[in-house]
Length: 176
Image 1: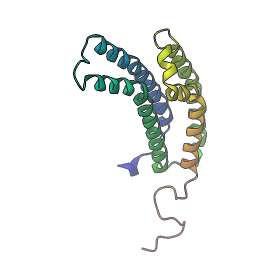
Image 2: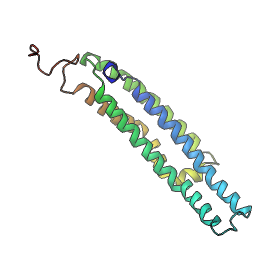
Image 3: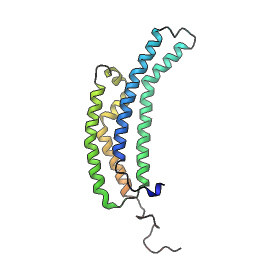
Image 4: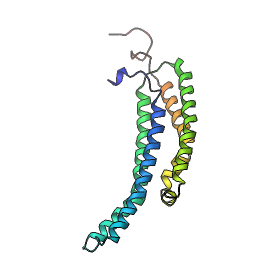
């Protein structure tokens, strides 16, 4: 199935939108989890022997676990994009389409970065955004990250040492 894949032009746009959705979702979840743990403490559900430890663990997950999870997802998406770029066979004549599509993706990345900034700077999420440093740093630099990942992807796609069409490595006759 992978040998029939003909291109990966939309991969960078999918990468950008997915990172944005996960950043907003995890930021909201990082806001909700401490609210839940404070509600559990207020309700008196921490009176059992392991109750307070569980609530503290939940609050720690809300503060640090979201950042680690986002970084894990982000790294996985970048590695998946690079692996996908390596598996795609594309003729070098299509480099102009890749450059044009990367430009469009970077242009849209500015809007996505600004949208995240507006959501993150609301009164309700301002304190949570300050606690979630990794998510904030990645989303503030999403245009630069998109440019670097897209450029690396294009280098991998167009600089592979393989013949177009899946034949042997040379250019002569097949000895078999």
